[in-house]
Image (cartoon, rainbow, N blue to C red; front, side, top):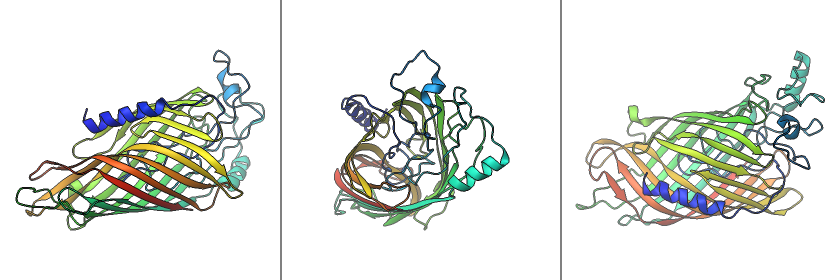
Amino acid sequence: MRPPLVSMLAFSAALAAAWPAVGQTVSLPPPAASSLDRIAQAPPPGVSLPPPPGAWDPYAAQAPQLFPANAAPPSTWAPSAITGQPGYPGYSTAAPSLVPTQGTGQLASPYPPPQGPSQFQQAYSQTMHVYQGARGSWAYLFGDGDGTSVGVNELDTTATFALPFFHNSPANLNHAPLLLTPGFGLQLWDGPQTTDTMLADLPPNTYDVFIDAAWNPQFTPLFGAELGIRTGIYTNWNVFVTDSWRIMGRAIGTLRLTPTMQGKAGIVYIDRNDIKLLPAVGLTWTPDADSRYDIFFPAPKLAKKFATRPKRSWWGYLYGEYGGGAWTFRRDTGAISPFDYNDIRIALGVEAVPNTPTGLTGSFEVGYVFARQLFFVVGKPQRQDLDDTLMLRLGLGY
C-alpha cells in the first residue's frame, strides 16, 4: 500500500476518535464532492430512515423497528452540497428524487404490499421529477509554476436526472431511481517548470466529458447497495487515443447496524494508470438531526449543523479525500503519454443548504493538499513529487 493511502487510513482513524454521543437517524446531506475526477468520495446512504423507536431491541423483529407503520416514508436521496462533480460513479447532490409509498400496517414484512397501476401512477406523478438539479464548482490549488510548485484551476459542471428503475420491485424497498449525471470538467495547469534536469511536464489544460449512472437500492430493511458506473473521455483534446477513455465504477454493500448507524464495505474502481482499485470500508453514523459522521475510507467526513435560518441551514464540515485524476497528452518530447495526478486533501468547509427540497445551495472550503505526485506512463521521469499547497473551493447548485 502506498504512503498516500496509509495517510488516508490514519486520517479516517483520527476522525473516528471524534465521535460524540447517541441520538436519532435523520435525512442529512451527503459528503462534499471530491477533487478532479471526483472518484474517491463517499456517497449518501441509499435510504434515509425515520427516527428510531424508543428502545432498540437487537433480538426483536427488525422490520417493524426500522420501518414503523406510522412513520413518514423515507426519501431515497438527501439534499446536499454541490462542491464539484459527483464522487463515486453515481454520486449526486441533487434534491430528493422518488419518495416511496407505503402500505398501511404491513411493514412487519420486509416487503411493501403490491400496488395497482392507478396507485403507482398517482405516486409517480406526485413524487417523480426527472430533472433533479444542476451544480458547478471552482477550486484553486495554489502554485506559481516555478520548479515543482504546480498550480491547478478546476472547473466542473453537472446535471442529474432520475428515472424509475425497478420502482415497484420487492428488491427495491426504497424505490431508488436510476440517476443519470452527464458532466464536464476543465483543469488549467500552471507548471511544473521543465529544465534539462527536471523533465516533468504537463499540458496547459485537460478536459473531462462523462456520463455517470447510479442505483442505490435497499434490498431488505437491513441490507442495501450503492452501485455506480461512469464512462468518459479524459484528455487535452490534442490527443485522442484508447487511453483517453476511462471506465470507473463502485460496488458497495450496506448493512443497517442500528437505527443510527450503517456499515459499508466494497470496492471503488478508479481506473488510473498507477492505481486501479481502492477498498471502500467504514461506517456512516447520524446520531441526531444536526450531525453526520462518515468514518469511511477513502473519504472520511464529519459534518455538523451550527445554525438554522428561515430559508437555509448552515453546516460546517471537516473531510479528507484521495484526490486526483488521469488524462492523456503529448509530452514535450512528442511522445503521447497517459498521466496521473494524485494528492491527499484535508479541508474545512461551510455549506448553506435550503430547508425545502429545492433551492440555491452554496459552499466554501479551505484545505491543505499534500502527497502530490505526477505519474507518467511514457517517458522520464516516471514519477515526480510536487510541493504541498493550499486549496480554495467554491460551489453553487440549484
